[in-house]
Amino acid sequence: MNNGNSYHIPVLLNEAIEYLINADVENRIIVDGTLGGGGYTELICNKIKENDKIISIDKDLNAIEYSKQVLSSCSNRITFLNGNFGDLKEILTEMNIKKIDGLVLDLGLSTYQLDAEDGFSFMNDTPLDMRAYKGENQTAAEILNSYTKDELTRVFEEYGDIGKAQRLSKAIVNRRKSVRFSTTFDLVNLVQEEYKINKKNLIDFLAKIFQSLRIEVNNELENLETVLEDSIQLINVGGRIVIVSYHSLEDRMVKNFFKEKSSTTRQTDNPYFTEDKLPEIKILTKKPVVPSPEEIKFNSRSRSAKLRAAEIL
Image 1 (tube, rainbow, N blue to C red):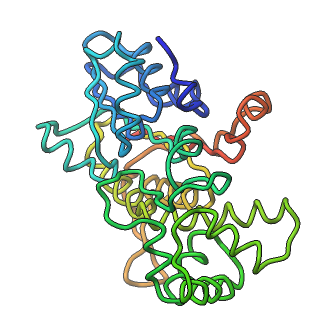
Image 2 (cartoon, helix red, strand yellow):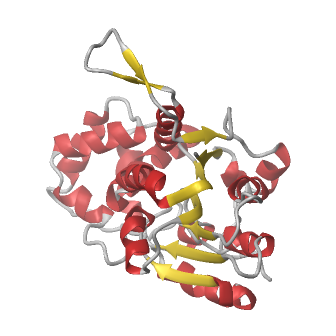
């Protein structure tokens, strides 16, 4: 089988699937919530037994169609779905599936999205779309053209950790009075005019801006929060959840969730006292797993990746 590298290079591939599959569990249903180019799904298919099943989900129809082709030899065990992993509970209900035995999420963009789809990369002049699922209503251009200065500031501060974001928001609001934002270079040109900074700092700054807008467009943090909370009820005892994140907001959410659900105490209404409770998960990665120097050399986009894994108790 093709590993999907021409569409997307899977990050921490072997590590993710090693943590994901519990050899002690029988008749598994595994969910790959971010199908991409099919790299994770392919290795899962190679590792599981004939009577195990895989549900592979992606918001991007291009990913679904591509992966159906490259994974055709394993298609009898895979259900491909165009959807949002944040809606996993509803998806499983519609499929009449009560429990699964593993969930893996790669929260990064695919190589294809960065290189070929509208709005994701500031290196290409494309329409400012950024929707992973084209059925969503709001594009990045609409955010730039309609949000108030305070709303834009919130997006840039919360999702990009951009200092003095009011300056950027003010520049955007002033620019759109004369011309609406339409393409990625409309935004890039504004940033270059407003901030006289060197190339490296400019690239880092643009990356934060585009990240902020992408998170807002696709409700990425809300979807992650939802699937984390639902996972406790959706995954069988012994099943596992593996998440690969790429920026501190996502990693912090996963880390804090795992810490809370693995804790043997909880806070009471009295701030000075806690009470005992049974842990709901066992953390499998005491520290996040990161790519090796060899993987980073081969795939520079993996350099910020962090993998965390846990098992349901």
